[in-house]
Image (tube, rainbow, N blue to C red):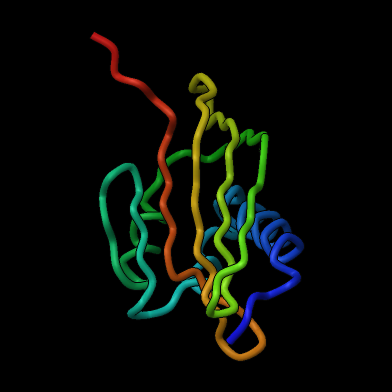
Length: 130
């Protein structure tokens, strides 16, 4: 397979769709369709999860109801298998908590004429200070 020339548009479109679903608690369960039953991996705040069902268990266990999100940058790169690597930098506020910077990285794996999330890494940009 070769590099996908539409990688930037794919990255931006994916991020928009993913957060549209994620940020609405009623729609969040629909994210299961973006992950593979066996070969999707997520690292959420250092906790690693494999498979769509386990990933969705984590995502639907999140208790906040309201998200205010500001995306600072979406950087995408084409991958040699036709996939897309996406890095998102942003700031989010859940419910009435204070806003925090975050980084989320996705690897979209091609499957037919579409993609699924093969890798998803999410981390709040919190720095432990002594």
